[in-house]
Image (cartoon, rainbow, N blue to C red; front, side, top):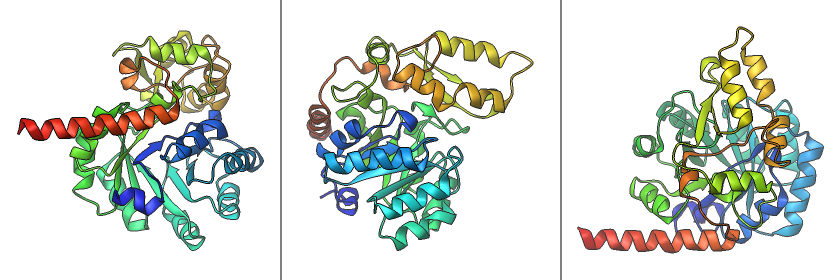
Length: 316
C-alpha cells in the first residue's frame, strides 16, 4: 500500500481540493466512497453551517474525509477547530496561514494534519510544526494561490528533497498522466479540484461545468496580483470586471477581497450567474471533456497512471 494511503486509511492517493463555501456533502462523500480523500472546504462558513455538512457527510460515507480551514480567510478559526475535534474529523487540512499554533490540538485529538504550501520554506516549517502530510500547490491550480507563483513541476521535486513526510502534488492535474508525472517527481499522491467539478455528483451549475468543458489552454486568468492576493479563475464577464477594476484608483485589497468573497463565488458556481459571480478554474481545464461519475474518474486515473508508468519502463 502507498505510504500516504496507509497513513490516512484511504484506498487511492487522490485528494479532493477544498472548495470553500460551495463545498457539500454529496461530492465529498462521493470522493471518499470512491477510495480517495473527500474534502469539505470551510471557507467563511460559521461553525453551524459547517457542522451541518459534516453531519450529512457522515451519513453518506463511513470512509475518511477531511475538512480544510483557510486560516487567513475564515473569521471563525477557533470555533471551527473545536467543532472538528468534537466530531473527530479524521483529517484536517490547513491552508492560507501558519499552522503551527493548531497542529498539537488536532494531534491530541487523534486527527491527522495536512498543510497546504506553495514554497520549500513553508513546507519545511509545516513539517517542523508537526504536519503529517504536505500538499504542495503550484499556481496552475484554481482559486487562491501562493504569491510566489511557482509551478507544480518545479515545486514538487524541490519540496520532496527537503522534507521527509509524504508530499501531495496539487495544480495542473486532471488525469492518470498527471498522477503518474507527480509520482515520478517523488510525490505520494495528488490533490485535484477542477476535475471534480465536472463529475455527475458535483452539484454545481451547468454553466460552470460547461465553461470547463469548453475551455482551452488559455481560458483561465489570474486576478489580484497587484494586491498580492493571487487567484486563478475562469474567464467570464465577471472576471473581466475584476481585471478592469485592478486598474482603477479605488482598487484595494479590502475591495478585491469583497468582490472575490464566497458570496460571489456561490453566485457563479452554484447559481450559474457569470455576470455577477466568478468561477474558479485551473489551467488543466483545457483537457477536461467529459462528465464521469466520481468513481469512474478515480478508477480511470489509477488505471491510466499504471499504463503510463508501465509504458515508460518499456521506453528506457
